[in-house]
Length: 128
Image 1 (cartoon, rainbow, N blue to C red):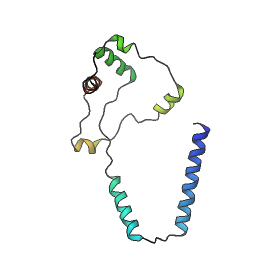
Image 2 (cartoon, rainbow, N blue to C red):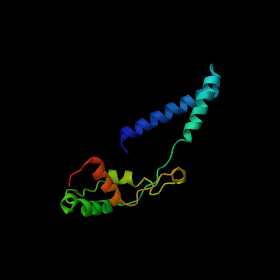
Image 3 (cartoon, rainbow, N blue to C red):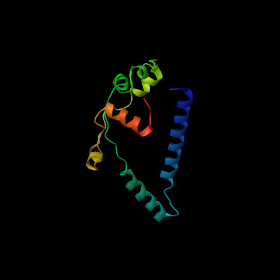
Image 4 (cartoon, one colour):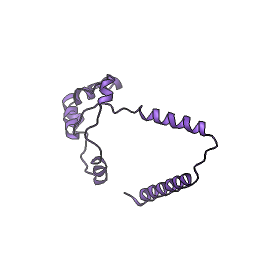
C-alpha cells in the first residue's frame, strides 16, 4: 500500500474516531425525529444489497473461451504481464459469494464463460 493511501486511511480513521468520541460524550440531538427517520432508512437500505450469482473462472479459461469463440488471432492480442501489485489486490477478492437471496429472487448465474462472451458480442454488436 502506498504512503498516500496509508495516510488517507489514517486520517479518515482518526477523524471518524474523533467524531464518534465527541458524539458519545455529548449525546444530544436537536432533531430526534429526523435522526430516527434516517436511522430507519439506513437499516432498511442495508437489507437492499444483494450479491448476484456468478461463475468462477480463471483468466486462462477466459482467454481459451475467447479463442474458441472469437478465434485464435483475437486471443493472441492478449499479452501476459505479471504485475505483483495487481496480483496482491486480486488475491484479496473472495472466490465464492453467498447468493441465496438473489437465487430466491429469481436471479440465475450465467451457465459458463462461453455464454458470457457470446452475450457480450451480441449486446455490443461486435463483428468477428
